[in-house]
Length: 321
Image (cartoon, rainbow, N blue to C red; front, side, top):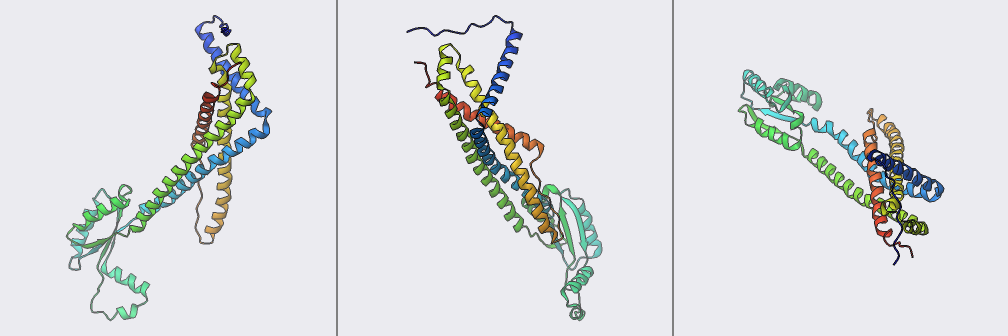
């Protein structure tokens, strides 16, 4: 069995070998880009598939991010209503207000006296004349407490309510927060759904790139056999295919970013027109520049991974006859 010839390495200093290492990578990276340009139709179709596949989880991420931004103001608006015992004097109530304001869990406190409560009820209910015949005011004084941001979650607000109800002046408290718990449960479900769909689409991207690189390897089978005959290493042979996968990922990630931006621009205009009828304003937040960088890095890694798996499997099966 004849021995394969080997390529003679130049006796270069360490710095020269390092420079040549980077030069070879740049050359093979640009060569792989040239291969994409020489097959524009198949390359564009593959990149389009990758862009659409990556845009779906990115769009879901934008949806989750905007939903969290919208509900953040609702979370912080959770209020606790404390109904004061009727027998308490004004001085006792003022003492209660001072103690509550000193709580680190409390953001702000609003006091509504019995007289103010009755006046507001008369104005809003439409029973002003009927209420004037009452012998005494049946409504209690109310203290409205807004929790701090740290305690505005359902769990934190409930803990604060229990603490406030221990005060002797408080008859009972009310916290209407069940809707907020349901909303947060829906957000958690949405996040898990995004993660599951993103995992499936990431797998699809890896498979698409792997199959594309497999076809490229089969098309260059004769060239690979010749390179192995003259002693080229596997690392040297597989490097252009790895760069091809990376280029697919980078361009696919950029396409996904463009798709998301166009989608956000389109929906933002339609949403602004709808909310304008209700006198409200809301702007959809698109992917930020840092999220674009993360998307491109993720796509390039997926491209490298799909190429690496395909190259490791198929290059070993090609041997010169």
